[in-house]
Image (cartoon, rainbow, N blue to C red):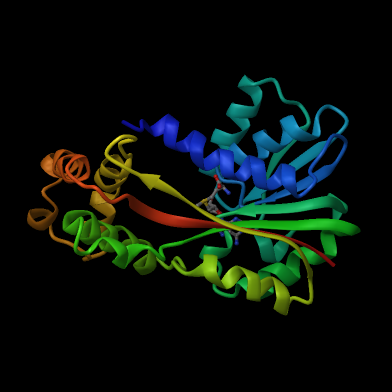
Length: 255
Ligand SMILES: C[S@@+](CC[C@H](N)C(=O)[O-])C[C@H]1O[C@@H](n2cnc3c(N)ncnc32)[C@H](O)[C@@H]1O
């Protein structure tokens, strides 16, 4: 069965491969947009090495303090995490060889404007790389895995009610084209959750339960959190079709 850490590794593997294929290498200065708890920034710090530099920024002080602790524990001095909003970046952070962001455009009211705000910080030959998700597979499971289909709609419905754009993945290419960027690489991939591999979906759904209820997407009776994980596990183990939670899109471009 996928444990939390395993699925995180699979999701991070997509990011790592994307960034390596986009040409991130030793010595680069990289800006990590909406760095959250630092997973991507720390991964990139290892890619750019001691001769490189990573600046991660986020609006959330809570996330930043997790990121700073993680970098300290791993003894990575070339990464620093600062508090900033995309629309109000400090002028003195300089220019970057690469600007990257994962699952952050989905939370912007105007993602096109966010891209515009970032471009002045990109060097002339620099690369801008985004990874965003799309809930595109939600209707795929209705017949074969009805519980998964239902819970899938609850989870993405909650993200949407919280203001997240659940279709930003499919919009990413157009967003970057419309910003007059030259597209260098495009990619989309999904992780298949099967009866052999197991799934972390039950854990994710259970964790999101309180948010689903507070957003009014589902009632406590409907979701029955205490048995949810087991019911999902049972449905997956009896299914001969894979479950797909989302599709990850990655696009790399330059000015
Ligand atoms: C889903 S998390 C992704 C975190 C990280 N990129 C990752 O993939 O692990 C989105 C992050 O974007 C941050 N964020 C959202 N809007 C932002 C903005 N306008 N400026 C800076 N950070 C922002 C949030 O605080 C949150 O930490």
